[in-house]
Length: 236
Ligand code: ADP
Ligand code: MG
Image 1: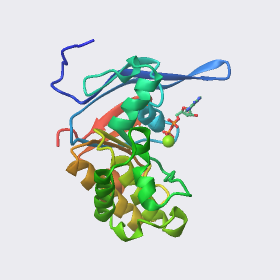
Image 2 (image 1 turned 90 degrees about the vertical axis):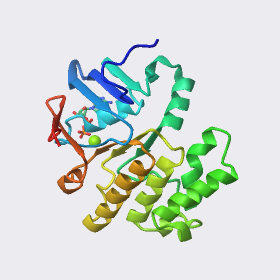
Image 3 (image 1 turned 180 degrees about the horizontal axis):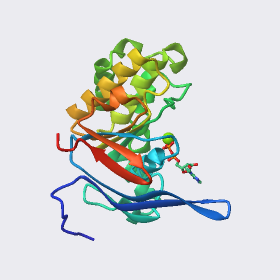
Image 4 (image 1 turned 30 degrees about the horizontal axis):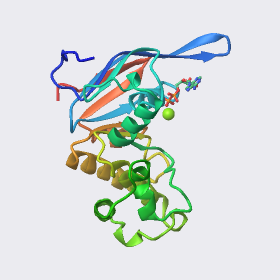
């Protein structure tokens, strides 16, 4: 299905998104009409109280959960119209995730962890390994390539998770409180890397954070409030 976009060439378009969970016998509306347009290179920080639906929104944009109502269009395509295998392929090639907890594989080295997303396709080639080493160099961890996650610090693990999220050159980078477990200085470093690397790759970055300091460094800022995303200071 091809449709003329009403808003230029938004690479991420969220329209009238609603999500209602079932909580016991009663419905629990969490998202109640979220709209969002983002272009390549746009960077948005999302704040909001605990339980306001930040993770829910990120998971739906990341195609890990389905909307109850409304649409998500990524690079002109509705990913939810795909079957499960197609959706997994789409997600793996277009979307990079960073979670609060790094989710690295403990038995794999730093370099192997960065290469994990490539295992779903043909498996890593020499060029992929070079790109992984480049990314690790960018985050200052090239000399840690053969270390296990247990042998590096929390901030270093999160930097590895950033590299892993970027290895497939996704058009969408989604981060759910990526600095939530880090001390402030380390959090600042990881936040800076996220902003720099997503910009270098011309990816869209949506980052959920509790840190007003980190949010303040994003060109776009929005708050989830009563199920709606309210963007502030969008006049620049
Ligand atoms: P946030 O990330 O802003 O803290 P969440 O998106 O995780 O908030 O959750 C928003 C609300 O939706 C919470 O009340 C949570 O309990 C509820 N919720 C999240 N996921 C589910 C689920 N799978 N089933 C039922 N309720 C859920
Ligand atoms: Mg959350």
